[in-house]
Image (cartoon, one colour):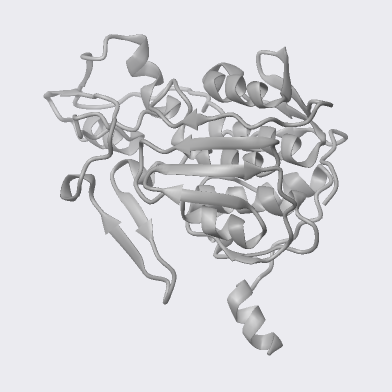
Length: 311
């Protein structure tokens, strides 16, 4: 796969960031499409995880407000994302939302998805291309931009809603990262960052403090040639490694994105099964990447079924 180009600008769709994992930590495993759902209250808490477990999703707030609840609900960010925490962090953390009997009409512009922005930044860096990303909010991904700049990604803010991204001529260098609640480096960029580190010179350590079992994409990256070792909540990535296309399986939304990114820079053809996960966080990602020069298409049948038909 060659470098992604900027002839066709990437325009971010103003969609939300699918926060299903805020109320549940999802542990996936291969075989018969099984998923094991573990509620945070039913298992051990991750190290560094905030103690309060309350409803923080936008759906939760809307349900309480629209339902005419008359009490004050205190919202304390748990897995803070800008979509959830922007208003809360502008005020005191102990502020709440008071219910009303009825809601009136209003106009609101949905903010762009910061994780989609970060993913396209990595797409430019991992392929050695140059992308102009419009309609984004760089101020919402300050920690991501700062870390990627450390690795050798050149990110120019052309205006408050447009970024110009390219990989440094000196190449990428390995840097450590730890996922933390907003406004620090988000867990939802961990998988994409791991894919990028396979193409960086040196050894990087990635520590996941938010969700358990969120390194399931690592084994799939190893199938493509990556040198990654997992120990508990820590991944050690040794680069730079040449990735080769392979048949891989996506375990979740961000794993899907990381495997797409790896496939963009891998030699040969990469087939990703269960890629439907990606629809929860990216709208028309195939079209956007193809418009930017990627050789990518979406199959109508799964890779596993297609492979069975080839035998």
